[in-house]
Length: 239
Image 1: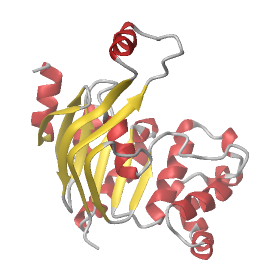
Image 2: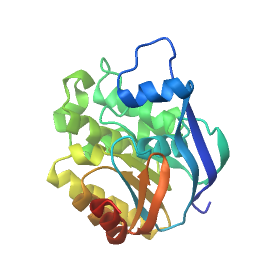
Image 3: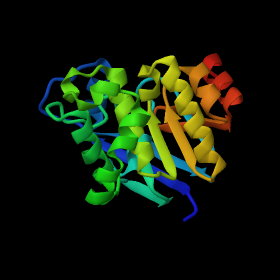
């Protein structure tokens, strides 16, 4: 199957809790206008095979929301979303891990959630452990692992499920330099065989090494969609 992601006039609306106390002046203004706010509005983007794309923008701009929509975690409230290909994702440093399970047990769970059968997931446990580089940590409870170790485990599990589309949300920024280099290598390998990498974060030099295209989001809308260096310039200059 040819990998691809297409968003057409896509919108995601969040319901605000009208009974709780607003935490910021901005939320107070939103609640005076109503009980909903758009996390994404009128977003139209296409991600083609072989692309590596960075989502950049200030906190609250919609980067995480967009990744979660593509991953199927959040529903679409307006527009259309079309996806072709197996998705592998890591949307937090916790990687969806169960703290009382060991790294090995969590790897089995993540592999099944990633689409593998139970038998194939069991067969992939040793490769996941080796790819994660956790050593003895693979047999320890997840609650004892650092954020970087959890990210290593989650990325290794996502990779071993054979994704055609890889989604990363800032988790690569928690990794040590050695594993970052491994992520760069995997990203190049995936795009070389027609896959897609979409990564979000604030470490612009890191994203610039990984991605050739940049999508700048502000207030849930696309402000720029250009080669990474050009999109980065728009962001830094505040155009």
